[in-house]
Amino acid sequence: EAGVAQSPRYKIIEKRQSVAFWCNPISGHATLYWYQQILGQGPKLLIQFQNNGVVDDSQLPKDRFSAERLKGVDSTLKIQPAKLEDSAVYLCASRPSGRNTGELFFGEGSRLTVL
Amino acid sequence: QKEVEQNSGPLSVPEGAIASLNCTYSDRGSQSFFWYRQYSGKSPELIMSIYSNGDKEDGRFTAQLNKASQYVSLLIRDSQPSDSATYLCAVESGGSYIPTFGRGTSLIVHP
Figure: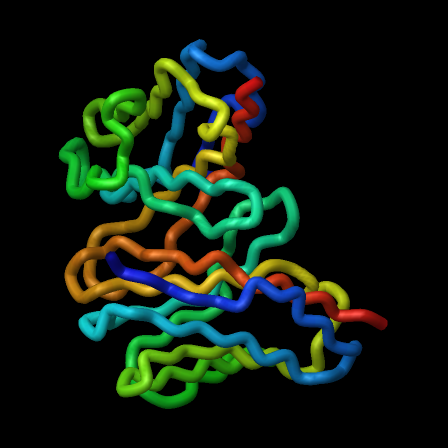
């Protein structure tokens, strides 16, 4: 079974530029999460999708971050304009629907450096 | 604000010893608890989940949950150098399906 795919793996941009990250979850996984992990910290939720609907985006900085999940499968996270403090690894994770399924399956992450 | 607290470490133990990792959480409505391992430069991977008070054992790993004290721990027996990683505690409130992660504890197992 293929895992969660993310791209690009690495991206270096200058502040005020824009960047987009792509995620393809495991087939059949209805729930998709984007987390931001700053060096030395735990993952922080940005947004959760259930199929193609947003469940929670309360911690998404909506003035600069946006995310969508087309047709309930792939998802894109965009940052525009980027700030220095956006330097982090952006982790996409998916999970099957259902109670107590527990495990989040993470992609390899997209590492962003903002100069 | 739901909080999950972990000592960042590093926790250093000799090979073969028991490593004890601790986590406290603020939301009394939390129902699902997870331990993820994250190697440097890699993504988190689940090693244990626990949902009810008491102990849950899986090989060298034992998760312990005490909801009254809002405390969850992970014990690693016969620690190996390959166990050296950051261990993330994640807590999920009933019905939200949104894990909140702690900052992680760095474990170093030295030969």
